[in-house]
Length: 475
Image 1 (cartoon, one colour):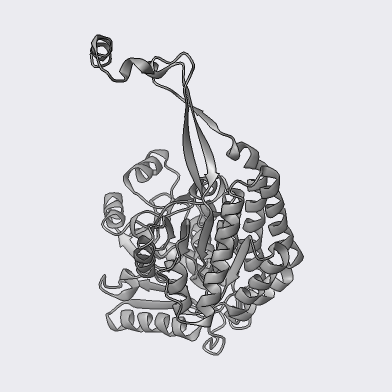
Image 2 (spheres, one colour):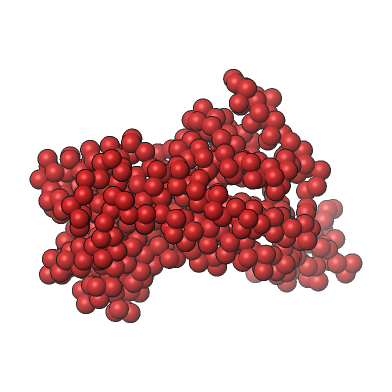
């Protein structure tokens, strides 16, 4: 820690908080099951007693964030995560027996999960509650202290969580810090025992580079272009409703939102009609509709408008689904926008969109669709709409993605017993449920020698006994 530069009072406070957590973790390195459950109970109380305040804070940060979506997509899965961890904690903490080779019997072996110490969590702006609470739950269940850096794009949420964390946990278990890019850079340079970052692939590279200076292990939850693949014979109405729900929740500002649709050219027109109908039914108005969220800030709003204009100039067909024909600029909202025949070199086809813009790509044969997915970086999620079990199995076998939902979108992420994580450019490592507990634990291997051990046969001075033994061992 002596090598860490302290350029500001803000970063000095950051280091003080980290040092305090590190000291406490070293003094009490193995919290009991009862202690960990008390931590989870405190987190549950924090959420339950402040539900409306949390919803209001996120709404202020977005300018307009659906209250239903905040409760449904952030508070509900966070509470489910607490309850799941509490219910399974005793079993997760148990040492696990492992086998011992015939040659070392009757010794025994086991694996003991052990807390790492202090875990760092970098939270993005798009789901500032769920993507803070999820890693916190896993880290606390594993017996760690936790330090959380909130996004500067969600200052109201960050300030509230900082105050609530201090109120419910004091200063020696969970620390929440707020600040801009410079503080974030200082945060990821701290010698955490594990660092979890959720954000863009580009920033993830910088985070991993900074963590490498301390040999800090990292879990990176990134993003990418998650495809929705609609097979021939799929129920197009059901597919359209699921795609609209996944794309328009949080106005598309979701790391696992369907980024583009692959559909057979014979079904394309009908699927587009079903998508338009589903969007109009779900959101008959947009500007003042409390169920439809705004784009987080003007920078991201202008980015999306610019990408659309670039696609239009390149010859793409742009179709805005704006049922009431409203002017949405003042509300900083975008309608669901369907994009057809978009050239592959456009930003919409190269970058993760993170907004309610949906490119639609038509294919002729199913093999072409699979080849299209596999020719691109491995996505965080893949959505398949199909009822053919053989074709479903083929997609599962022949594509690699962070996770899959079949005949729906998003829902694999909120299954606490499933690991969540990316692969390649969409991330590395997992958390949620047992996998989260394991991510933030050291699995300590323990070998117990028996009094009846024959290990003396393998020790020097070597002689006839070891030569005889080696003939058996190497046969």
